[in-house]
Image 1 (cartoon, rainbow, N blue to C red):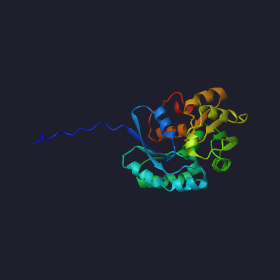
Image 2 (cartoon, rainbow, N blue to C red):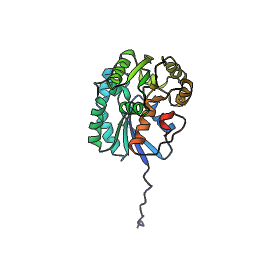
Image 3 (cartoon, rainbow, N blue to C red):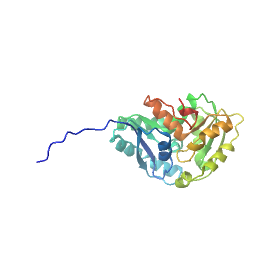
Image 4 (cartoon, rainbow, N blue to C red):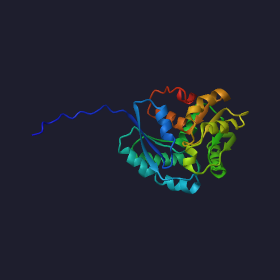
Length: 244
């Protein structure tokens, strides 16, 4: 006869559910790099290989299923980690998606596009310069969304890459040169827009070089998660937005 064993459970850590495109190879690794060890990440994926309006729309249709699946893990919050999936749609779409996902999951949801807008407002930035890896067509859709949301975009540059895996393999030096190509004379801050574009390691360096606050999709999303969960935020080395 097997002796009855008293079942004990480990204490519950803070956990974040992260929804990313199926081809994303950067956001999870940057989150692991920046997050404290006691915060856990669990991911779900939506099928997308090319960053174009058609694939982004099809991918977004899978967001609800991905969010519900993550909610089964009892995560504390769910982040929708793709800015352009939202900003390539109609103005205000970030609010529609958040409401839809929160209703289905009963879990706080952070939309990266909303996080970017909120972080820029929090930093009291009115005039922004934007760097993206996208094609001109996709970038123009995003810039239109940002302007419609009240941002003054003083300049923007893009790399013209459509293959999302290739975006994740762009070198830090290329990202650095893209930011340095921006006309910053009238800018009050810089946005590196794309969860897939490697940038976390060089944000602090770019802030020192430009003497401007630099926000990326991933740092803005992480900042928003911490604020939504009312967690103390002191993450050093990845830009002022994360330093409390």
